[in-house]
Amino acid sequence: MRREVRLWDADAAGSSANTPLVLADRVWSVAFSPDGQTLLTGIERRRAEFWDLATGKPRLPPIEHERGVYAVAYSPDGRSVLTGSEDMTAKLWDAVTHRPLGVTLQHHGTVYAVAFRPPDGGMILTGSGDRTARLWDAATGRPLGEPFEHPRPGAGRGVQPGRAHVRDRLRRRTGTSLGRQDRPPARSPGQASRPRPCPWRWAPARGNPARMNRDAGSCSPGART
Image (tube, rainbow, N blue to C red; front, top):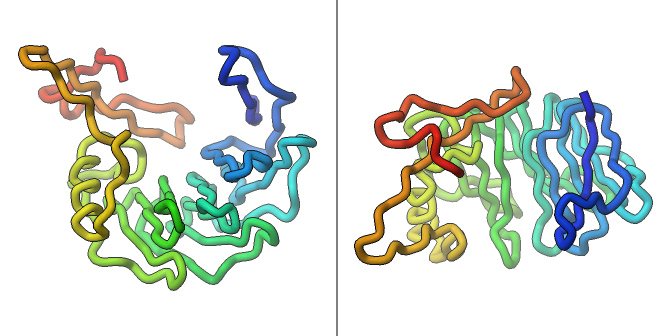
């Protein structure tokens, strides 16, 4: 099995931009620094690694978790990074020294998704296999209000149902939204609605995504995503 990250030229489809970065284990997540000079990778071997894109070499030391790192994100100012792990925590780190900033966000399941709220990064959003997404104060690590609860697992794994619900609750609670890009495009009058594709759920044990068909009555397994 190849354990590498490749960069691709966005202007030349299919063209690799540089030599692949070879990692020690399976890669679950990646994130660019705001200046585009560093790549942060979350891997199965209980850590996240910083890579200098000019040299293709890792910047030591790596960030350590007790289990695999499934989610990584840079703050908008590039001064800190956020990681989410199978050890049921999300943690905040200094992007230069790679030392923990003393903020540990606790869930009751694997943390599959993490994000900072732009433009100041003062708020953090996490999604977990415990069926919740939560907002946190980035400075104190305190939860902001009650969690967004989902009726089934997959809160942070890119599952579409509930997305609008979370967006609306975020707007009511903070006065902000997740952005216009998260809104579905309006249909023209009389235009038939397209079949909704069944969501994907990542299956780490098998190393590949599996289509969830339990909602076959409300989605189309053959529809394009």
